[in-house]
Image (cartoon, rainbow, N blue to C red; front, side, top):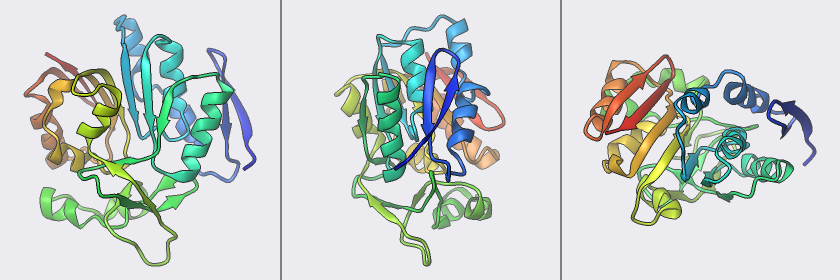
Length: 243
């Protein structure tokens, strides 16, 4: 696979696929728009020893986290095969010696399907969003990406391993807590929130959300308010600080 190169501040160098519709957008969102509030965390002088990057994509946040907290133990998790290859290349290009694993994080550990589109993985089956949460699934059909429930006609899908959030946390801190969870799983976050309730294991959470209407926001806030005393919900993200 051939890559183009893009350079950013702090001496980072990113490889990206010229045919991708999302690689440069992802890099810009993390490094220019600061969608995961890294600058805010630095302003607060937060120190992290353990960082779990779920939905690492091509490594934009992983590289930034390593440069900001070089002593932290970081685990980067990404399910999509091509993204995972670019993730490993970007970690090598930036001499970032963090561990990366290829699996999806969802509500079960039996494997799942992805619909890859040059770095994006489109959701095919959103019936559960309607039935469980009362959400309109139509916005995901064309624009959002993530884990599918079954194969969709006309799309070449990938069958990938999956783990629950508990299992992913155990991969970094067996039976213990982590300092920072970054999560961007392209529409599957509602399934994770429905199936996971041990948020005491996570001190800080920064996540991109693909639905922030009232029913979805209620799911996030209700789950986190039991263990986190500051929860910030903005146009497309949630940031939470544990009590």
